[in-house]
Length: 214
Image (cartoon, rainbow, N blue to C red):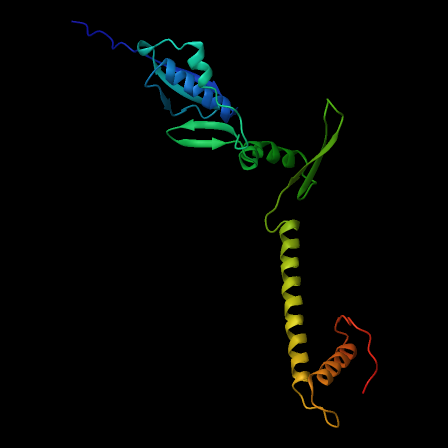
């Protein structure tokens, strides 16, 4: 006795990506309305970017134009390019995603140009407006020039803060030191501190002109 093959009533609708999120959401609304109970399934093809809707065509229902129009999702400020969507999660088109897919090209470019130690630069011309762009590949085993610059700026900021603290400590010490032969008041202390600043070469701002020493 021959066992009949199971009857399959499902069909996979495969949508190529990347696709704008508003478009994909609209399409998902229409599919779910036409095939109630439709499911997003995992894309098992590592070489094809796509979103797969699995529908049961035996559950097919009609959707009128008015109902379909209500399912339209308008683009907004949160619009993104979706690469994959399913039980495995969602992936959007980001610079990191583009870079990961571009990596084999970068590696090949360095292999074809062994004289280039860390940088390769290519010129690209837009065919529409003839704008010139530069595409730069940077191979970095350690810190990049940008990272080194950021570190130097941080160290400079810390050094300036240390100098400022030392400068402030010197001024407070002069303000609190008795000045022989002169009344020990705040004004005289400030003048003494400014004199020290001029002698030590510290930057200062003299908001008012001096009338001379007492």
